[in-house]
Image 1 (tube, each protein chain N blue to C red):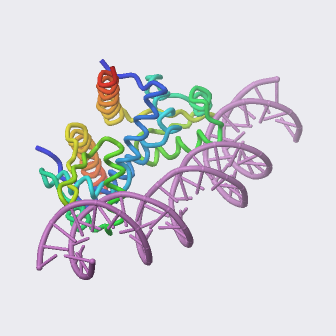
Image 2 (cartoon, chains in turn brown, green, orange, blue):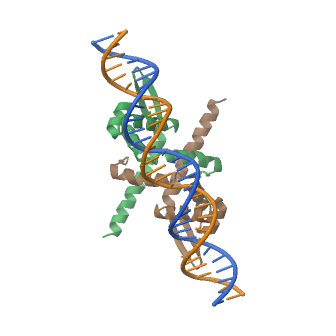
Image 3 (cartoon, chains in turn blue, brown, red, green):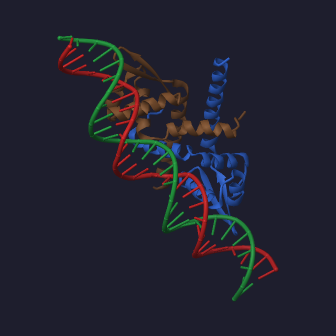
Length: 109
Length: 109
DNA sequence: CTACTCCATAACTCAATACTCATTCAGAAT
DNA sequence: ATTCTGAATGAGTATTGAGTTATGGAGTAG
């Protein structure tokens, strides 16, 4: 049974997609997705090629959006992806994108 | 098997999510989703509460993004959703959102 | 031809936000 | 106490994009 896209839902859905629509944030997500465990902010910044302040903001953003969790430990702060949705969406969308790429490629031959 | 979020893919994925992250565009999508057939631009604008010029831009945007198709017919232009992805994503995300709403609600009692 | 409808586009305004730099703060180590 | 490291935050800048208004074009009806 398909879900209905009600007006109040549009707010939330929009928020979620905004969180997922930014290149830098996607890099952070990929980093967290690859590392299956928690990563410190520094590690995320380094792996995704962002500066410290920027990574900090994007990570905070993801936490606010409910996509990541934050756990301080001593001096450093560890972030983990809140899995179910992100993985599913990535699979779905990446599948679609590569599918489309394949089709486009074929149609150009 | 999970798909890999490669660097070039990030461009595309980002573009797709940007297309899906705007309230007005989501309203247009919902309108097209509800009407299972093609809709004229005017009909879309009216049903989604957007002004003509604005609806025109968003529809053009969706076509560019590969989410809708455009078919002129005489004087008017009909738009249709390119289904598979949009429906799937909506189901996935709407399901997640309503799930989270339910959880939040419960945790507040 | 004229008038009307439907759509696209340009110019503009305005708000949002990504990025950087600099600073501050907290915990750890010496 | 001082120093060092990891992280958060504020100010400032630049960019992006949504929305509106107004105009032009293409098709249709009268």
